[in-house]
Length: 152
Length: 100
Image 1 (tube, rainbow over the protein chains, first blue to last red):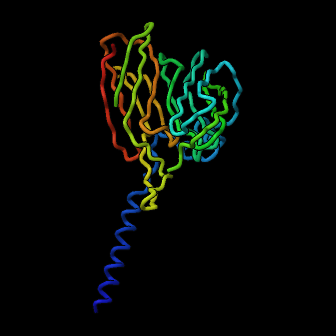
Image 2 (image 1 turned 90 degrees about the vertical axis):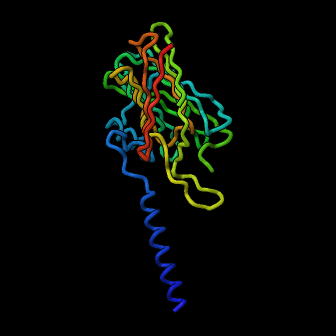
Image 3 (image 1 turned 120 degrees about the horizontal axis):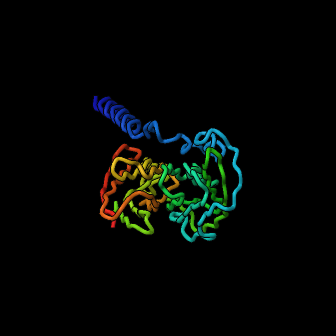
């Protein structure tokens, strides 16, 4: 009798933990927030975000990021350009589990000059993509990371 | 969220620091060996009056306590701006500030 009660309790416990695990699962992405943020490769993310992977390299874009980042958990990045009609700027860290770090939508009147701090799991290439007049331009820089920013 | 906004050369320069853990959902709790559930800011929007002047979408690669800076035109000293973030649990926070 006693044993059966234990068993029943155990069973119940199992069910409740399963239920909590399910509610804790990440909710489906909101409509506006692009699924590109869940993509595990740069090309997939580009396709999800812009519908193309065709990028033109343009060195007039300023990508300011340290060449050597001592702490991968906090790496300051600034993307700036003098191009006209910039509508979007996005930042990719190629070797992070999900490469797309941030995407900025810039209405008219807002300068094409954004700064943010990102995490880098290891030494890698960081890419900035600028959308201007419906075309995509890119520039990149290698960053050496001394301590990774994604571990526990 | 701390926001500083100043007029420089006819443009409003905004710097904001949001306090948020930005959990990726990939990290494990060292003591319990369980995965820490994801909780990160997905969207950060700045409004000047009714106009959206800045809209940022974040992924998991954005650092803990995100810091952002941007510049926009069409504002003057004394105007107020409102910044709102929404995270993956759909929690939101709005903070208003006056441009100096």
